[in-house]
Length: 181
Figure (cartoon, one colour):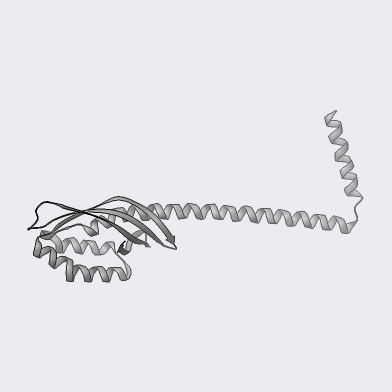
């Protein structure tokens, strides 16, 4: 019964199409083709957006991992081997920040650390991504630093927030900016 009804509807529709003028058939065919192209384009665009979300997520994850690893290394040092420590640190920074970091360390941090026999150890308490722009990701890190000096052998604990800009360089991430917040 249902099969016969479906067959009758199909045949009636097919007969109706057969009675269309050439112009009407071309218009309907063109509209259907246009609809197919539009749907295919929309599907392609949605697939592109999905892929971009995956790339964005991967970049954020990689930059966050590199930042939480490298920032404590940049902020930790011991007076007894500070010159070698800082030579290693320079490879973790890039761009104009590298020149600023080298100048600050050579003119201020290293002399003060040697004079006061400073030992500083930094640890990231928590961190998150705040923005992504091209090959750069901005992080917010909550950092705890313990510092000892020859005058204060007991560790002094300081907490701070640091905004860090990580930039993709070749196949890795480097610190391109570090600003206390």
